Length: 234
Ligand SMILES: [Fe+2]
Ligand SMILES: [Fe+2]
Image 1 (spheres, helix red, strand yellow):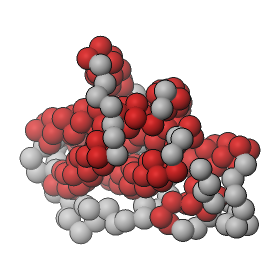
Image 2 (cartoon, helix red, strand yellow):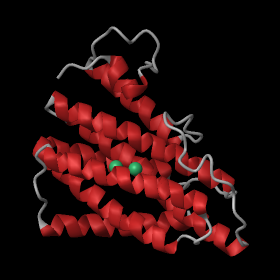
Image 3 (cartoon, rainbow, N blue to C red):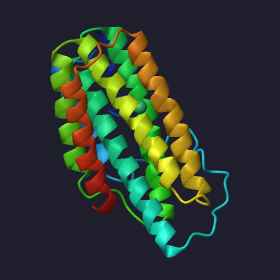
Image 4 (cartoon, helix red, strand yellow):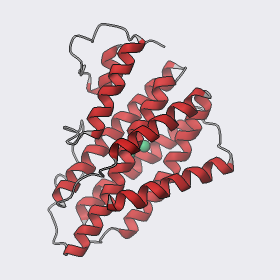
């Protein structure tokens, strides 16, 4: 499994975040530093410029009541926390992935998740709100789960991704029901994210994801519930 530092840290942006690392191959220490770099970019808002334009960029702001704004901000904070966790999860998986193609696929998905993260952060600022104060907890927990399932083998980590993305899609669908009808900007972001999460899940299945046992699926649902309830407020 040989990836250049540029591929690992910058993905499809093609710019090495750590200057001068473009031509070197990664040692375990490089990987550790690249991982720490990603963690910092994820947890320390602002996340920076997304690689792709925010799907709501061209949409005009609509009139929202205070109550609607606070509710939309709560939901977008939950989505932002989900994207922080997605970074942890994908980076955790990628850190222990055995197959280079699997690692690359995870890195590509993580790049798209990073755009989601930045879009949610932009929307939160527009709604006069900020990300969850527990971001480091969401990241660290997800990284540990990602690495632990990855250690069992790529089929299991892909299975974990497929199940996570399935649950995330259902969750984003519920947000599309719950978001104020006139909050078209938040809705545009959530719709785009939902389409891409579905694609991530389908890619994981195609790459050979193992179906997870029922108790594991239920435990994941329970964990997600705790996270979403908490991040709505904190
Ligand atoms: Fe995402
Ligand atoms: Fe995803």
